[in-house]
Length: 422
Image (cartoon, rainbow, N blue to C red; front, side, top):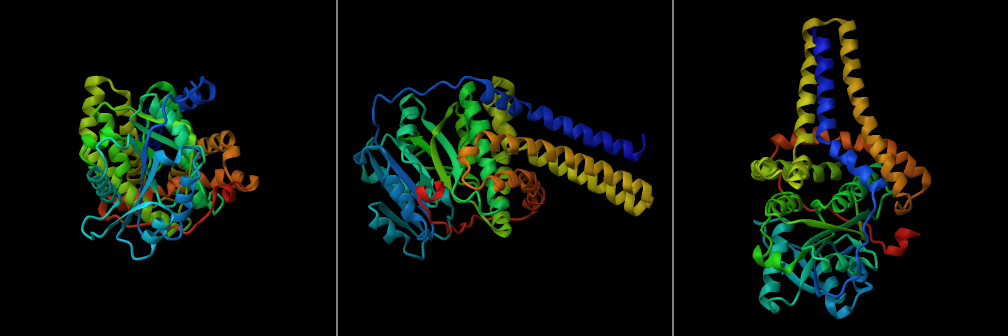
């Protein structure tokens, strides 16, 4: 077998490996498209909630979120908003207080990150309010907006017995450019074809950054918020699954999230996410594998696929193909062999592009009415979606070697729900 045949065999093997590892996600799509979704019964009780918002210099957007909370189709007396003005140098705290939120100001340059801000808030609430005053807590980022029925819909799922619940993550700025659309389409797919499918199959869902609920009992058991890796959301999801907790999903609770618009900002954010995935896998990977083997736990397998193989297998594939290309250029120096080698690599890239494109098209078609931009842009961004995902490869490589620290993302899009939908 010559080098070209070996390279083709390697790329084909990697392609098949990807298909086998993630075959369940293709099955998930079938479950969502052809399965019967069980309706959530009306809640027997209106529960009392605290809403936790970690905000660092979010004066531009904090008012719109708080106004959308006050506009909820839910009894005012059962919802209290808490804003943690975390190392703020602007007037976030004053604006939040003016909107009626309880504000905790935190100044700590050593323990930096959303997880520390959440823990700070929970510790204060546990001291200042009766032990079980709040039955559960919502966690949002300051740039979010809530559909008017968000809390009412989440309350139904909470009332049915779930202690952790995530929601449908839509976007405020899908139409900004291909970068914001790439994020948006990924989160829509995650909501529709991962979390909804998990819920329908009785498996555990996963929270994703913002727009989730956690019961007071779990907060008390954890003595606040104990997850402080760079991706505290994924860490929390994995830790919950390892403790046998099942995360629920409420597709009728819609949240709108602002996505980065510049490649520099996107790179910075996803670099932190990639490093966070490595951290989570390093800390919890062995425990997940043990649970998969010993307990045949599908949710542990699902979480493992979420945090590990795609990055590692992609990096290994890039390494082998790059070495093959270098060998062809530096040793063989045969234009024909070089052409064939490049062709093999290109064919592999095209295969991955088509799979990602298919997922993007499927999500765009089924979520068409939930995507708030022109029809032309909806179609255009299905073609750029795979390119957006491909940019994770160099980001993942850099994350292997670079020390990453948490840093805030600037939010600038102040819109109301009506402005998004118009």
